[in-house]
Length: 283
Image (cartoon, rainbow, N blue to C red; front, side, top):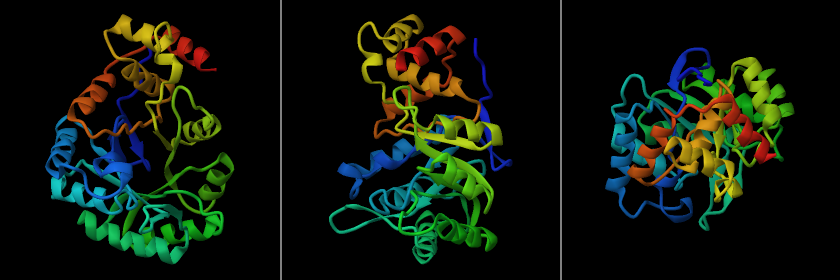
């Protein structure tokens, strides 16, 4: 069996379990406004912590603001071991469009607002949500470095970065994590994952549970799921965890039932043959 460490050190010091919770979907429809049942959203967050999850990932753009506010309402004062990760670099306008904004002045303003909403003096992991094509990445990350030097940010992460941009980022400051799209059917960030593994940087795959045709009857995820009395999504998550020791999936959901199902997947161990069958079928 392939057995990997159940934890990962972010930035060389923050020990997190290798299954976090992505808090994007605790907001309303289309990631806009409050959820239909804020009380249930807060119950979901508390249940995540009860199940041993100690990394919660969010962003100021989720809602906007709503996800951060709910996290604070549900979990503050935070347990000592809980790591809160959030992001800056996206804005939402009145039409809820996603607007990229990597200007240093916006990042500083966003950080101050996130600190207030989350009721924190320092953000454990602050991530550049997406590179701004109109702003040199060195300028955007320069703001993150200043915030870190001021004690408002503990560790810096990046998101939606190429391997080349990651190298540029690492020449400026320590990078604790990279958050890119990655799953069994979309491995375009394979080179970024390899760079993270070589450097001991956490790799946080977003949209981790996409399965495509692999979960259909006769597909490898469906077949392996039957052999383990699991679901195809659980097998997909187990494949990610077995793929690399720096992999840190953060599947999100608005359902306590699905949350519990995802946590069970972290206990599913796949053999080398099973891992290879899935990888080969995914192409």
